[in-house]
Image (cartoon, rainbow, N blue to C red; front, side):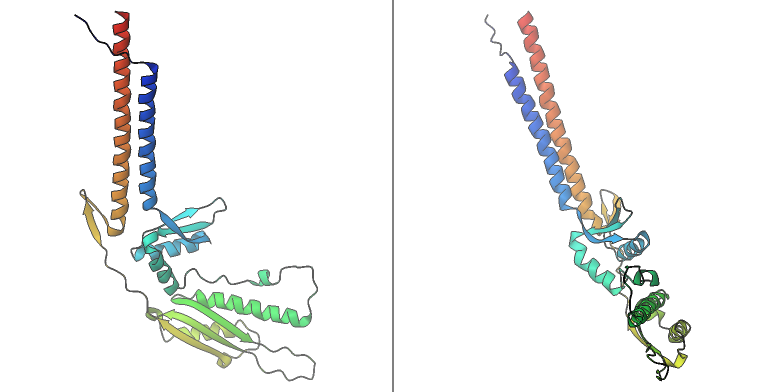
Length: 272
């Protein structure tokens, strides 16, 4: 009786190992592709931790899928789902975020090595004072943004009669924070900060802003797990990616084990 034995050569084993490696690479590539489909895009970068947390809180409050990343310089980048990018930009804009970067006295009067004229120094001082007052008014609860302009003429000669200084304030305020005490508080703050300015010479214009309506929490169930609808797509993609990887690894393990067993069987048959 004649037995026909198929000998497993190193070339055959190499082909099977090559096929296994290709399957694993294909599975990893599929997982990367699926995860990239659910990736987030940068919304704002170079933020300080405090401001980034405020912006992130607003985004999450309005059911926008967002996260933050901190770089080596401790600056924060806000990331949002690409499908919600436009909605996130509009929402933060309505809350005046990120807040304007007001300059301080120290930043305006940095030593540049040049000797400035008295007129230039006077202009710098009034600009720096306006910036600091704008920052102070913006810090009042409910104020979204504020701009302060100071009219403070400079006396050119001892005989000049200089008009009294005045100031104007434009503030965007959330309608919920509109109270009868708000305008007097702003006027008093400016009057106490500018030399020789009277309370009555501070003009304040307040523009109310309606806050966005908070959407209802939209929850769904996926495989018995309760999650927000915005997270459903990411969860499904992650499950698919894991399934593809497991399938690739399983196929690779099967072919590897099959190659090993056939090689071992062929060796025993050759030795018999």
